[in-house]
Image 1 (tube, rainbow, N blue to C red):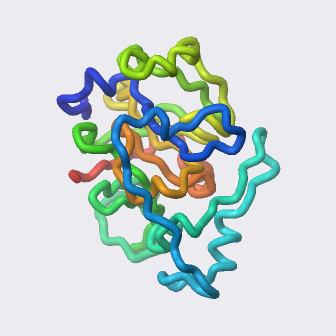
Image 2 (cartoon, one colour):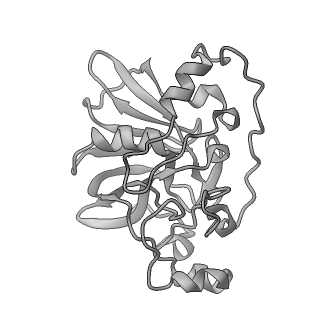
Length: 235
């Protein structure tokens, strides 16, 4: 397994969080046990500091109204522009389609043809919950149900009301799309999930899961079939 020494706390995990949920029903970040420092608002003018215009970034992370639960636009002023989705040169021996997670730099790559990759900004596991190794996508979910583990309920009794599962929606910690990671036919209990929490990107806040901005996660999800290889590099 790719679960580290803190697996007793993370085995059923998903103490992942969302700041300022649109409906106010549940704040994912209220279910975090560590405090991740926000990036703070960026001073954005006509262009970002990473070569993408503000208009381009706003379009990339704009609302997705056609979803089952309409997705709001991301407030990109809370995202460091270096984490915006883009195509980059990427040297790897892994086959096109492979997902590579670089937790040290808060990036997720989807390997493309021609020595390139699509790069996404990410949030990753906090101290004590980091892991690395090879896995694969064993299952995919849209608007998945989230169930807090008993260890979490013991620490945070307010989560007990979801002991039988929290239905999918904007406040659900798994978000609009989830890739469930497996090894040797067994669910590792780790995922790549969708987040509306702009300030989480570039931070270690989860119990080992990897979060992408919702618009990025939908983009990755749509190109990722079951059995896709996932490589998580050492942090």
